[in-house]
Image (spheres, rainbow, N blue to C red):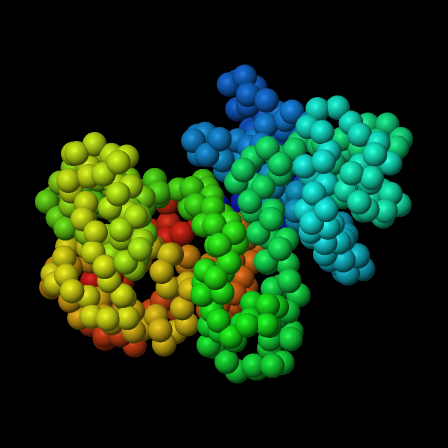
Length: 451
């Protein structure tokens, strides 16, 4: 991931165009530096879009949902990230401390408006083409027209819906995407029905259980008044459980979580003929991707019984024999000793962030006890960066996930020191052989070996 911090970049406050200046030219202010960067990266991004006859960003109803394909060249991806970073910093810099609270409260209102409109089915009731009057829409939704108009017009300040003429509402590109794109629609419902009340219950949870790291004493538990862990709670509600599954699938296949980063994040080809154990591997998405790229690898996917049963069927039904025959399933509880001894690779992808330090140590210890001298343990998970070392647009997303893990599970996303602490607690012989963060990935691949 690319950093464009003002203080460290070539155009930053100490750089060649910074506030100290060179060659006798007047120094640029921080704001001027940001605007200069913004203009430069706008030119790069627009140049790529125009050269490839791709649509430029727009708020119009039929604008594309994704402005830049994740398969676009790295130069274009970097320009987009730097452009977003500069735009965000310009907004924050020009707003200043005096408008901080004002900006925070508008963000809170946007979330509540999203929640209100989801609850009353406003997204679905507004026609995808054309417009509808506030009067008719309020009647269909069973809500106050005055309240609808007030909330809709607030949402429009964030390009959620549009008012093509007085008294009428229509979809914008954003609001339409939250209906027509199943992944976005599912995430909208999950965020507004589950995540929003959890966020609002954090203070309650920390007052009630100030020092607890138990997974059933988190903000989630305060929000839904339950002693069950989140997974246990939603498992008892079939519709919510299915929604959660779809949301997790959407996240898993998003560009920054794409399995191509697993393929490129480690020298799999260098293993030659090798056995890979995918711990908590669900129904096998990761192993299928690796099997397609590396014909010398064979796999054992470990998970709980009903997942193993489903996965075995899915693999056989959806893959050629050359792939399916190299993939086995095995029932396994990772709080028990690892039954496969001496595998070439033990893969744990997005396992530990659901667990606190003590449980993470137990999970890894059970794996390490079965390692051979040449085995690799690959942990693919978030490595939270040091403050200011990545772009602000990426850092705030990474840190929001960190906070989210705390709110849902009393767990966390770890920085590199946090991962080292787990390794040291498991076995002092463990060492990190490499940490690789493929470009465009939020996750890193931590290669752990016995020293």
